[in-house]
Image 1 (cartoon, rainbow, N blue to C red):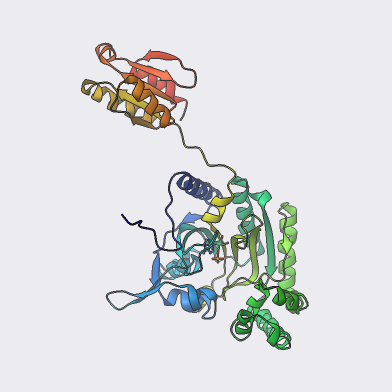
Image 2: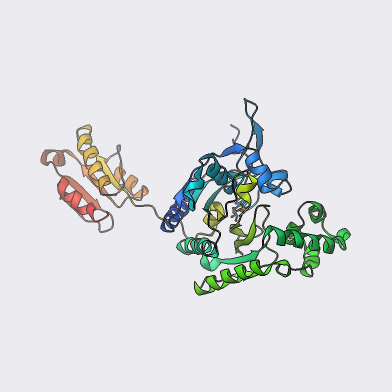
Amino acid sequence: MSTINPPRGTHDLIGDDSLKYLYVNEVFHKAAQLYNYEYIETPIFESLSVFDRTLGETSDIVSKEMYVFEDRGGDKLCLRPEGTAGVARAFLSNSLQRSLPLKLYYSGSMFRYERPQKGRYRQFHQLGIETLGIDHVLADIECLQMASHFLAQLDLQGDTELHINSLGSADCRWAYREKLVSYFENYKSELSEDSQRRLSTNPLRILDSKNESDKKIISTAPQLEASLSTESLSRFEALQSGLEKLKIPFKKNSNLVRGLDYYNHLVFEYKTNALGAQDALLSGGRYDGLIQTMGGPQTPGIGFAAGVERLMMLLKQTPKKLAPVAIAPMSDDANSMATQVAEVIRVQGVPTDFIITGNLSNRLKKATRMQARGIIIIGEDEIANNVYTYKDFATSQQKRFTTDDLRKLFSSER
Ligand code: AMP
């Protein structure tokens, strides 16, 4: 039989991976709700126009990574490559202008046709937050506070470094872009092929280059900060002092520009050394022009997205699942007692599972394999007396219990 593999760049979540996936999601849901973000779910496919104009025609995502297709009705659609543009689309589709400010969070699959490698997939998962309608540095600080709280809950703060930069207003960015182009023109022939292409399409992205000879040229390039207006600079300073007061460590990184067109003012990235080339764990920034680009009213926004698979790879241990109680009805006559007691225990928040076949020693072995905390045995004697024998594996003690006693025994779990 030939092996059937999943498509390149995709993977199944099974066993330890699925436990890690659920854990990272659960921690994120709790953190987002603690900061009063509301859950939003948008479709995994959207009209192509939701992404191509907003992310920028020259961004890597739009120019080479999107899964674009025409459906049977002839509509041009694509699998979503990221979450923010879909949330912005939902904001407009649902006429949420009157509900501003809005704090939304999401979790789900994203799709990018990239070359798969460690930490980089074609279908991956992102967790993200978006704050819409607040043009204030406090919203920027809260966004980073939430990100750092989330990473701390996963015990990953020590493995990450927060990089921040300000792109300033759209005007500052254009002024800087011009300076940058004329600087790089002097070194055009020495730049890598990718950077030469970006010189005419997206020159800021050259600053992101990992190519060694590019890096040398970049080290003496004009700095973005010198092109920032006084207003943009003081906003960036207010952010930094806010982070200092919260004791959130950060590093200013003037080469951090992010790949997408829609960012202005703050951009940031939590980076890690632990994943090789794929060093971005959680990335985001302010996008005050995005909703207008989609034809909506000018609406400020800020948010981030974190890569679930990369977070999972950094977890120090596999999260433990609650150990179940095994239930062994030793004959068919014991089945109704078994199903009833299972429900009594589950209502107390303790998982239970049946072990239906085999002799007693066989079933004890299966219970151990199931990593059960103990086993309830229901034989002829138990049926006659309407009681249950429970063997606790931690203490090796075995005792008889009534239904009420078992309810009490497991009620401490709630
Ligand atoms: P971006 O939307 O590119 O800013 O990415 C946000 C986060 O998603 C990154 O910081 C990564 O953790 C994660 N990410 C981006 N692309 C991929 C990918 N192809 N595979 C796995 N994770 C990714």
